[in-house]
Amino acid sequence: MKKVRFIYNPYSGENSIISELDNVIKLHQEVGLTVVPYRIQKGKDLAEALDIIDETYSYILIAGGDGTVDSVVNAMKNKNINIPIGILPVGTANDFGKFINMPNDIQQACKQILDSKPVAVDVGKINDKYFINVASSGLFTDVSQKTDVNLKNTIGKLAYYLKGLEELPNFRKLKIKLLSRECNYDGEMYLLLVFNGKTAGNFNLATEAEITDGKLDVIIFKAIQVIELLPLFIKLLKGEHLDSDKVVYFKTDDLYIESLEDIVTDIDGERGPDFPLRIKCIEGGIKLLGIK
Image (cartoon, rainbow, N blue to C red; front, top):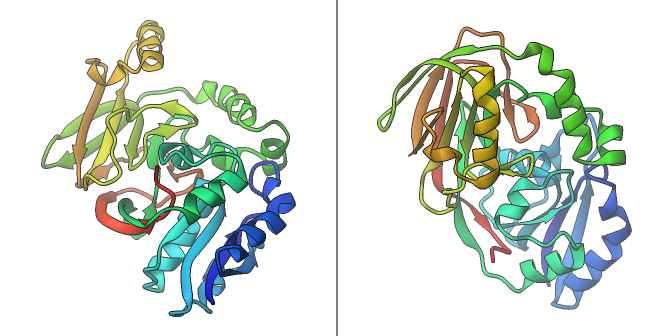
């Protein structure tokens, strides 16, 4: 009987995965798969969850948010494990899960994974770390890092917005230098996002993104006058922001970014590396189940 390594984060979202553990096991057993669970623990190296992976394992099932998926993908890459993954999106935002049309209902998501075939999809790499949805820097990008886990579990995405309001006094122009074959930018900005997926904080920002095109979608929100922010935000809500002259947008598979500003980077809600940044698209970098 083939096995599935089930790595779940009990702290993700509203802890919903805990009440669904039996259903996850049952659905897999019905199709002849044995579930071998691993509970993520704070302070424990996730690499140990992969120590038992061998040819008897069909795939790795991950229950958590985008940050949890990133952690597992990075551990897999470090160990040269190339079996497919399936994602049960049980985090607070689940941006990547929405991008690949995974249901929020865990049982439906399991069935969608079990009924699918693996597809080779792109992943991003920022310096020596991998990401599946978005790498970012600039204003508000560390909101998720600063938001209390208990608050996120209690009030969900609203916790991010409340924390974002606290960051408004830090609103300022930031200088960056970006180099790529497609576009060079040397100027001021408010926010930089490099997408493998489409959304961040449930805002559909990279509307042209595809998961199998071998490209990342780069969006720079230029530093503009405060009076111009509201019209730009309205364009964003309509999905028309990429055509604005207040935004730099292009696709690339390789870019380099420098900044002397005192700002951090963020990878799907977790702290990213320091500048300078080399960001690449790894075409077909991971095999993914459940794509619809």
